[in-house]
Image 1 (cartoon, rainbow, N blue to C red):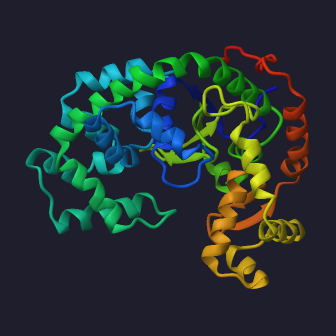
Image 2: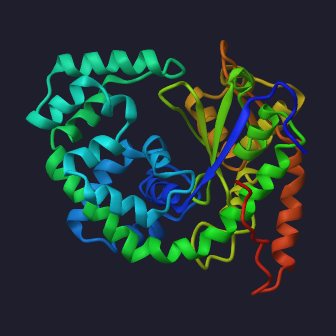
Image 3: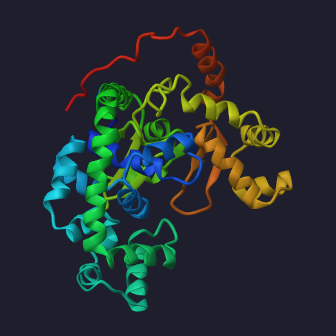
Length: 365
């Protein structure tokens, strides 16, 4: 079935290059992502101290550089990405992968060349970022952290590229064989879904509850499937304003951790509904969509406490977050996910070790 009339054109992309960076981002997250911190630390400790420190510093600023990965083709491979970065001068490799708005700013190359920056540079780039990314507030300290990396572009770029190669060879090379068929199958499934729902419904389903009504105004949307993306969606825009959404192309029955029998999605769901405050939040949101401030007033809890509980419910994909173009974010319940918890638990408890993996296949071009 084709796209609904008047809907944006969807461009589907995938490749292990996206997962190379997405996995590093997850492994370096200090917040709750569903991955055991001890296991993540164990993977990082496979690297030599210099590579480990370089990636620890640079990964938060790099994220998933899909603005660059897309230049390698619609299906960029991890080894090709590492090889291509290795061919660049070290400072160019860092400029290429760091936040694209910062990397292409006229000040950026000067900072990388001279190895220093000043307060005026921070102010100018902060203003540019805020103008381009009007949907969120850009903190000046965040920009300063990026510029401090660019001030060491030659040395740090060399160390980051070496760290990426080491990470690829010591961990990710084997991961490629595990995830490639699973991503293919999940992207195929998502493409089939796109023929029977509008783009807002599709993104809500793929993102686990993010309702972005403004997407209907886009002429084209790039949807990138990645095994390591998640449990929440990654969202950005290209230089021409085209939205890019990196969604989780991982079956709910499969864990991020290789060989782990219990998937993080099941653990997150059970943890989410095991707390009385979160159950009260779900009950309120089941009656009507509410803002964070409205929840705090009704439950007589401090806003930071509500933020914590909403984050856990979002990670479990149990609530819908609506981000209107103008107005405050509102939260609501996702009844289909609430109903699926017991089904997933029963499926896990009755599954046999070594049972067949989810179907695999090759997505359509």
